[in-house]
Amino acid sequence: MAQVQLGRIAIGLDKGASSFINFIVSDSLPDISSRGMPRWREKQRNLPVGQKVELLGRIILETRRLEAVKKQWKPSATSSNPS
Amino acid sequence: MEAVCDVLESLLTEGVISRYAIGGATAAGFHGEPLATRDIDVFVFLEPPSGSLLVTLEPLFSRLAALGFREFDEEGLLVHGFPVQFLSASPGLEEDAVAGAKVLEWEDHRIRVMTPEYLAAIALRVGRPKDRARLVYLASLPSFDRQRFAEVAVRHGLWERWLEWSRALGI
Image 1 (cartoon, rainbow over the protein chains, first blue to last red):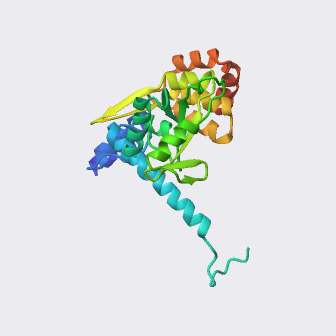
Image 2: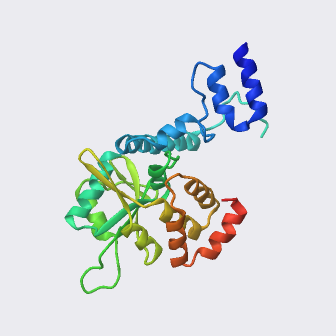
Image 3: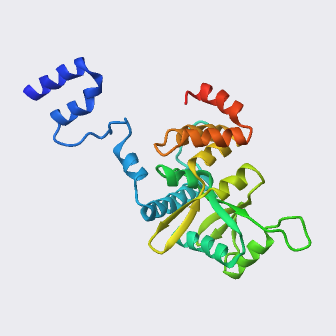
């Protein structure tokens, strides 16, 4: 409880201390990096080239797969959507 | 995707194309986190056939057909299952962008990718709504060199448009 109170005081004094506050009150690293970006995005920005090539390839194939789903979609017989 | 990179490099080595660079959303994804995109835009330098002033993609597609890539998916030729749009780099900005491409290497592979500054300049020139979003994304990258971008924009007559967009987009 002392840690939570310390965190609340720090917020009032300095907004820039928010990531530090997260570290104090939580055992795990914050989900948002100090630049306000989700950590998974920041991690992907810094992937080695080979892994980035692989990820780009998977994204292209998945985007095409989702497009195919959209093109082939038809309302089901039980759909109650009036439009 | 790695196999596509290898095909592009082999076309270069064989002299079918004299230069190439990946552009568009795929290239932007190399510099930041990968973006959703359905194909790979590849800008190429082609030499006109002897006796002609016209550039044609025919020798490129002939070679790709000989390698077994004959099927198209909308505008893209399927290369190892990936739609690749081959575009002849137009004189000026696109040719400069291809010439200034960054070479990325890993293991035994290599790929050439337009730099964020040239991608941003091309987005500025094309000017669609999605290009505005792409420009905001590129300008936010830690690797984005504003000085180099400014030089490119001035050189290609895009500085006034950049001032207008940067004010409107808050970048």
